[in-house]
Amino acid sequence: MVGEVFDVTRASSSYVPRAVDATFDFELAGKLLLGVQAEDGPPIAAAQAETLSAYGSGLYGAFLTNHDQPRVMEQLTRPTRARVAASLLLTNPGLPFVFYGEELGLTGGKPDERIRSPMPWDGSAAAAGFTTGTPWEALEDGWETANVATEAADPDSLLSDYRELIRIRRDHPALTSGTHLPLLASEPAVYAFLAVGRDEVVAVVINLADEAVTEYELSLAGGVCKLGPVSVIDGDGDGGLEPVPPVPDPSGGFEGWRPVTSLPPYSTLVLGFEPVSP
Image (cartoon, rainbow, N blue to C red; front, side, top):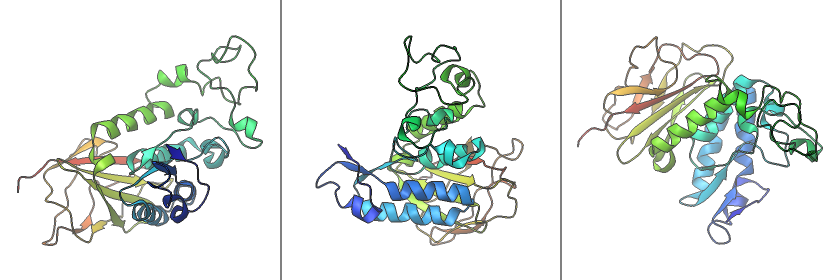
């Protein structure tokens, strides 16, 4: 059972697991969107760390918005920002929930009925494939292109991004059950972390800015296992060149890591390290 506790993280986490199996974390959701809007990674990292500390081994529902809040695209306004918000949701820890239509970039704000408009399945004029009858609410603007059929056929659509992120999450258990190690980024617009699993280590590097980031360095104080060769799981590398691995120090940490020379605007880079035998 997932509880809807509309409160700060410390309060909502107190119900887990005594009263419910998990709670939706509203404070984290709000800070994810604020961080995307401000193109500011450190507050996102701080919120994620606080959430993990509060819940401990307990479960929490990660999400961006729900049926009572203005939709993601309504708040972020730009598809590029919606993409990095999706990356934050679907690569970070937690049990992710997607409010229907979020993966299409549907808009909708108050009153609540406009947040809950019909799901557009295709571009047909009657009701976008939602019903053969008359829907209780009019379709939201933009349904002609923001519908499942159109976006499913477009490999560059927001829906395709969501599907790829879900595939990555499914195929790399370190993202869901591994140890989350935040990386300190010299550039505030960069949010990055390592997910250390039993058989793999995954690095995620997200550029929240509307311009490329080239002068950045990633650091880790210590505690990571040995890292083997690194390769791109998904995202933009350096024109097909292999990413550069970090050089660990005796503590298991590293400094000055720059896996690729440039992080494109609003981009997500997911890297995988081959396991190293002890």
